[in-house]
Length: 543
Image (cartoon, rainbow, N blue to C red):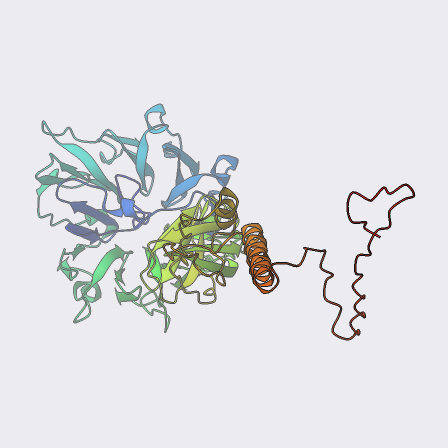
């Protein structure tokens, strides 16, 4: 019902009290009021990203405060619960439903654009705009919607609606002022010491920037003393008579009145990202999108409905007797089948899409190497490459998918691959001086010399051997020369042995296995006879 809302849509503000803290910020919660601030003015809770979704409600519904209107069935990023009405923030516009006796659900035109935070009081509503102004509407019987004027240079950056009073925090960039209007004092200097008399609780809870908690006030006594050793707190939230603290390790600590079990934190509760203290119950949103509730449940306000199929809770808030949540798409599942192929100082990785996209389309993938932690990303493709890897080192790779809800779990690691330097081809030998154009072309085409060839005589010894045709021609020429020399020697020797013998055709020697032919008898010339009449022959006859 009550609570402070921060610029940027503070996520840790509940209808009773929701408080957030970032580095350098201090948060205060007061029985029905809460706020947070930073120096300079900032939106401490803006770091919490809520996936747009639809509103669900449970608990008391006499005024239709959990009858969600059609407009709040999508795109909502914040909710707030009052006594008998509910608020939602969608794209800078406030949506309201439930009891409208005091016009607390009649959203003015000024709150239908540019709104960054909302807060629901008991019968009134507040909206903080991006320009640093506040819009208030609903019950103004004690001035709870009379927003005070600011000093020159100050702008609002945090709001909180209580039972019958309001709180706002303003900054000029270097200093802050806490304002309280309605049924109470007008200005409280920083550091703020605030009490909400309308809630009948004169106490506040302060979250200091060292992560410790301080409680001041007079009642209830059980709320005034936080647990001993409470440190590392990142958010606080106070209900009617109890308070919650969220620690940096995701665990919850509660103290104060426990008449309805509202401070009996379930054993083993961990992984919490948002806390909400309603009128008497307590709520915790876990990182896996589930909500755990405990405490008073007489109207079903602690009976959290299961999120619809494919959706998960991304935000919770508590009213007096009802609770609200936002259900949004979840993160994708883990990709499967990751494999990798190694190259010189690089690897190419491929994978399969996860079985579930979490209810929202996958917008990208991130691949991480082990070791070195190098990355590559895609906007939907199922493969990418990583460079700068060390050759000779074994690498495995994991893949994560991302959608509008966030990044899902990592895939199983790929099989290990080891990048290696690229193999270097042997150099092509330069042709020798004796190489013909044909030999040079052959060497260039093959990329290597003939390993069995011997260097040609007089060559440099650095290239291939003689061309085969050239070798044949040279061999024939040498053979003919030898034959001619032999023939010449034979003729000269015969001439010396028989100078007077008339040269005659010499038969070639017979084969070794045949007998030599018998020599013919030499015919002696005969004495010619003279013809009758005393004539004689002029010369010897060949017969």
